[in-house]
Every structure is written in structure tokens, then in C-alpha cells.
Image (cartoon, rainbow, N blue to C red; front, top):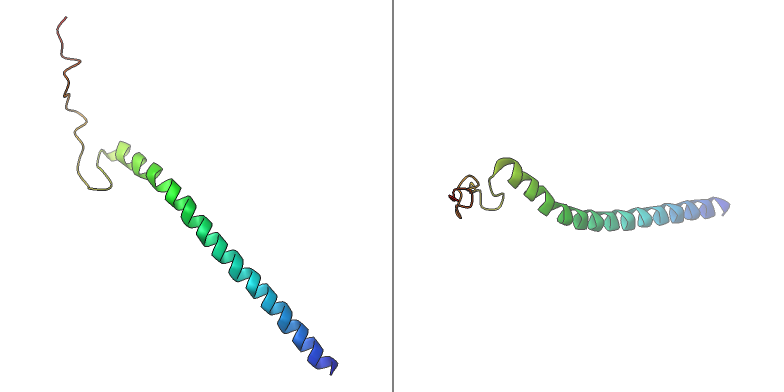
Length: 75
């Protein structure tokens, strides 16, 4: 009978450990997704400034065109 109690106690310890592992992994994945969603806009902005290509639509931006002619005015 003591042998059965040891097996039962060991199985109970393993199940508690696995429950904690599953719970922690699930919470960690949720936290990672939230953190990733907050970092994506910053990464897109960095990519936009480095390449002048929009990461959403892959169009090249016209950053060299001066539309308002502020610098071309004659005083």
C-alpha cells in the first residue's frame, strides 16, 4: 500500500507541474502577441524611413519632390 501512495503522490506532483507549465506558456504567448502588436508599427516606420518604400502597399514614396515650392521662392 505505501508503494501505491508514492505513485499517487508522484502522479499528483507531475500533474500540478504540467498544469503550471501549460498555464504559464499560455499567458506568455498572450503577452508576446500583445508586445509584438505594439512593436510592429515602430518596425514599419523604421523600414519606411530606411527604404522610402511603404511596407503596407510597397509603393515608393516621393520624398524628393517639393510640392509646395517653399525652397524655390524668390525673395
